[in-house]
Amino acid sequence: MTTSLRTGVGSRTRARPVTAADARDPRPAHDPPLETVYRPRHPLDLARTLLIHRRGAGDPTHSTDGPVIWRAARTPQGIATLAVRAHSDGVRAAAWGPGADWALDQLPALCGARDDPAGFDATRHPLISEAHRRNPGLRLSRSDLVFDALAGAIIEQKVTGMQAFAAWRRLVTWCGERAPGPTPRPMFAPPSIDGWRGIPSWTWHRAGLEPPQSKAIVAVARQGAAVVAAIDRAVDGEAVDRVLVSRPGIGPWTSAETRIHALGDPDAVSVGDFHLAHEVGYALTGARVDDDGMLRLLAPWAGHRQRVVRLIGLSGVREPRRAPRLHAEDHRDR
Image (cartoon, rainbow, N blue to C red):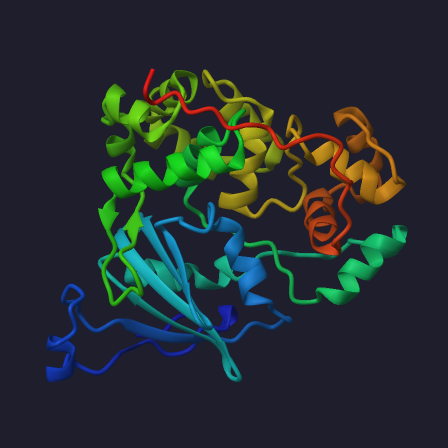
């Protein structure tokens, strides 16, 4: 089986059969993977491109083992585990599970092959120019898994990153599905849309999620397939926003985060983020701004505003903290 040469993905093969040594491995038994090599036509920083999808260091859908990045996903064809590493001949990838074919077909998009930087002018600001020069391999990745990105964004609404990552970790581990393959640690794919809808109220509470977030996920899951189909038909980011913000509990911030992760949208800006406007303002002007000020500063890069946000994040410039970190409250015992 081969895939289109236009994507840079070469021949796809089955790896060696399971041996007696594999039988002694204490991890669950697994079939041989499908394997391929993706040869990008652009510089690629694999870790910085792919790990935007990881939700905290303990994310059960992601793991790193030396140079190998492991990713568990629920694809349209079923659960898949993907292992990728940068190599002199490209990106070597192996995939296990019923969704293995889909995961390998989608690999170029995950690595930023559909990211088009044409029209982006880094020279408009010296900080952006320098960050762009130092990070030539940054690409905007897309997972093409809309509901997973949407559920993750809803979980991150109006809480600290620590709280959101812990809730995601618990929910995916408790309610998701064990990922196939020889993963370096137990990994799990997120629940299906029906699985998200069926999570009982006490499980949401035990996971540390507040009722507004859990109700929003359950509500959108009731029409999950229709929402995903409508986003697939959307012609641009504004159309995606119209689909999502019409749903209860979903606003512009959640829609933008979904566009960033699922669609690799180069122009999405997470308006309403607790820190983002301050960071953008400080990086570009040396002073804080609000959301309106941030949008004015990013306006010269229309079409590539998310690219600028990512480069600001990689620049190393951070606003000095003026107050203690926000205390994370735990309501699970209440």
